[in-house]
Length: 166
Image 1 (cartoon, helix red, strand yellow):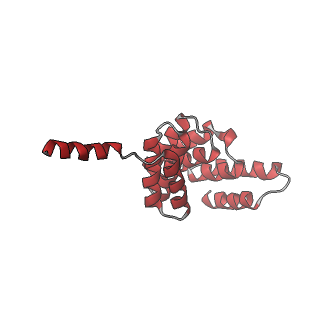
Image 2: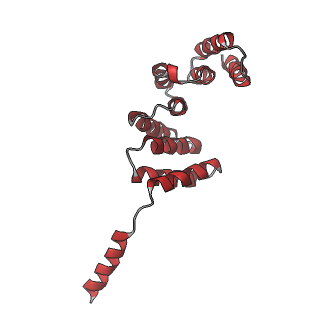
Image 3: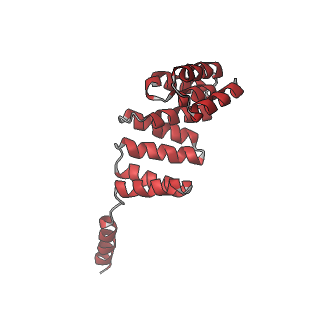
C-alpha cells in the first residue's frame, strides 16, 4: 500500500511540466516593463531553462539582470546570447555597459570595437565615454553630428554627456 501511494505521488511530480519558454518569456517582458525585476528574473530564468539555446531569451535574462544591478550575471547572459547568434545592437551595447559596470572598461571597449558597425553612433559615443574613453566618444559623436543632415536630440544630448565625462 505504501509503495503504491509513493508511486502515485512520484508520478504526479513527473507529469508536472515546466512552463513553456515563450510563456515565461512573455511574462518576463511584462514584469520588466513594469519594473518588477525580481519577477522578470524568475520568468526569464524559466524561459532560458526551457529553451537554453534561444538567444532572445538569454538577452532578456541579461536585461533583467542588468536592471537588477547583477552586472556580472548580465554580462554572462549577454555573451551567451551573442554566442548563440544574437546580433541585436541593444544586446551588444548592453554587454559593453555590463562590462563597464563591473569595472572592466577594457573589455567593454573591445566589445564596442568589435561591433562598431552594429551600434548607433549616438549610443556608441556615450558607451565609449562610460567605458573610460571619453575623448574617443566625443570624436564618434562629433563625426555623427557633422555627417547627419539633422542632429537628433539624442545625439546632441549624448554629446553633451560625453563632453561632461571628458
